[in-house]
Length: 416
Ligand SMILES: *Cc1c(COP(=O)(O)O)cnc(C)c1O
Image (tube, rainbow, N blue to C red):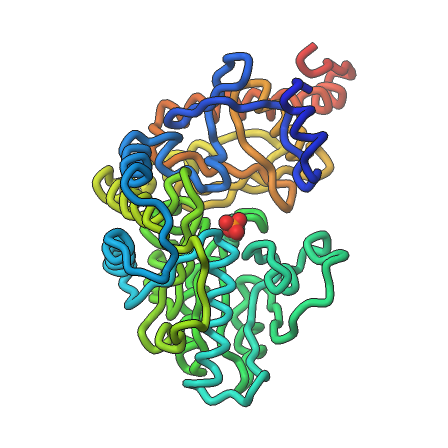
């Protein structure tokens, strides 16, 4: 490990296990390490860097705003917040937006809104509201949110957790319908599960879930923190199913890779439950965050990144599906959001990610032995070709020794 990596490991809390690379510079889809080596960023900071690193227009918005007005808190109006919220509502078709910073805070905001809506509007008896979530969900790391995670590690040692949540199998409509009671406030769902393994639900699942929610007076809350803002080839992933949620969470790419900026957006009927003092955030919607968020939304539209992601994303998935290697169990995804699940008995996704790093491609594995790809939406087809060629080589290296032992009775060490 380099000195810098040692320093981070020594004085950090150890809650991450970074790959052995120290990144010092970024531009577009590329990152450079402390030895000057260039890598293609196929992970895009878990989808927070949709515009590419250090996008000039976003950096200009950030620096111009930082030189004019910084944080004033929400105790006063600013000339930046209104235009940002108006733009976000216009693009998503929502009535109102509440700005926070991290994605987890936007989800917490959605949970609070749903509960209060249940008591004030739906008429659920005090403290009885229930929120339904899906197995394999990832909505952030707060105590409430990890409390309804189905990943044992996320919960282990952090209890007790707040009650009022129940989890149903992802993609299973009958299970959702059966879980709804008169006390159900909301169904919280990722249209495609990101951290859970790039899990795409069966065709029509979200539309049917929306119909069941409407019939039962249950709010549909879509967490599009990872899938939103063009990632899947539509502005929102729920638009693939023609679904208009009652509440929507955005984050990650909304900050342009420069700042944490998140939003909870909703219909009037839901957002109206908040009165002054009910909820807030010191930095949420500060002038710099609002300026960057607005510039990010404008850039998304002006550079046609949603349409680009639709076509380059289809190309990416075609190339992945054409990879002919027995180590691949399944390719999943939509747009520029893809997961390559490997047969557990044949290769570990973590090992492949390590070899990809050696080959100059940065990515990260996630649950279900899956390699995740979420490159900046600015990537082009020749760059995709280069990354997928490296992936094909690495997968060939991990699998060929086993195959050749079986056929030729002779093992060849990878990279020997
Ligand atoms: C990343 C993520 C979050 C949490 O966002 P943070 O900014 O890390 O708090 C919530 N929901 C989804 C779907 C995510 O991918």
